[in-house]
Image (cartoon, rainbow, N blue to C red; front, side, top):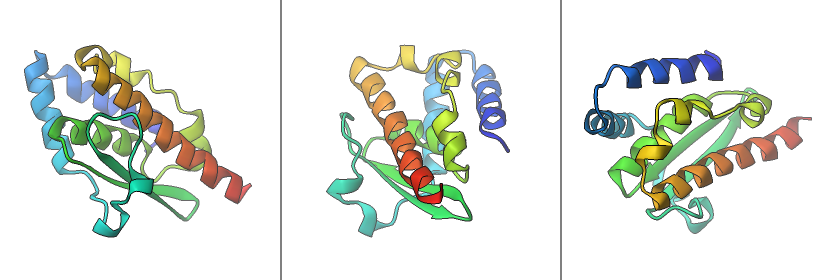
Length: 140
């Protein structure tokens, strides 16, 4: 699936819920399906700066696509990173770099987060794209 198709799928899923309590519960569920980072990658280098809670992300290149794993010590944050990884996992670095993240606004996520969590969300997106830029330069 393309990044756009995955984003549309997520927007459709969020549209099924009537209120934000249900959406938060769904995000918590998504967090449980996150491809978990190995303990050896839970290092200071892999922590996303700018997040109130701890979020670790590891990226590897396989067949010209980036595979992400992550974890967080907070359940909502874990759900947020799970959504982002679902969108960007196993995608080509150029596609990740060029992808817009308007779907975040479409599902209303940013406006329903505390300011510190919203800043963390921006930091997560930035970090995933930075991994993509780093890998993009390796394959070009």
